[in-house]
Image 1 (cartoon, rainbow over the protein chains, first blue to last red):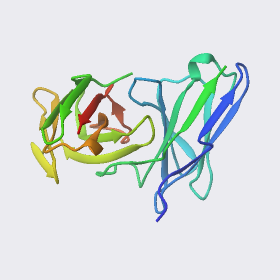
Image 2 (cartoon, rainbow over the protein chains, first blue to last red):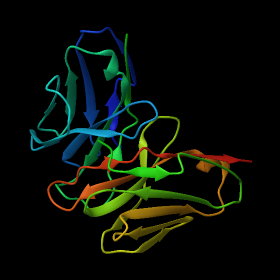
Image 3 (tube, chains in turn orange, blue):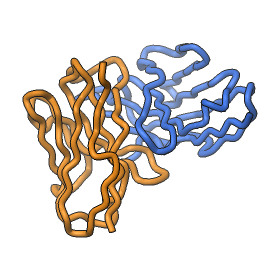
Length: 114
Length: 112
């Protein structure tokens, strides 16, 4: 049973460019959440997708957008990249809105903006 | 923004010793979870404790929750070198959807 799959694992982009990160949730999970983890910090919630809609959003600018497909996979898009967007981006999947169990995380995408 | 703080920020012990990490949070919660992260990669769920529970065990892990003090502790008994990792607590809110709010983590080093 595959867990959460994220691609790519590493990415280097130039300031001002746009990037798309991808996530396939664990089999049976229908909800995908994205987190940004800066070096030495805990992950911060970006947004959550359920039934192909953004259900909740953290304190991130509109440059951060996402999408969820009918097969529950998801994309995170970041436009006009800033140096401060360099971080580990984590995808987490779950089932339903209020799971009383832990989330399953992917291994993350390490984004470096130069 | 971060929900709270883990304490200590870093902990260094010898194999076989116990490791205790503390977590404080700010708002009412539905549950509190602990995660482990090896070398800045993905997070692994360790244990979940609900707001109406006070203590929970899983293998060598023991978690306590004190909602009156808005704090939790994670005890790892008989530590092994393989336990070397960063440990994060995360809370889900009492209302709305179950998004996680993380602390800054405790870095644990277990030396052979």
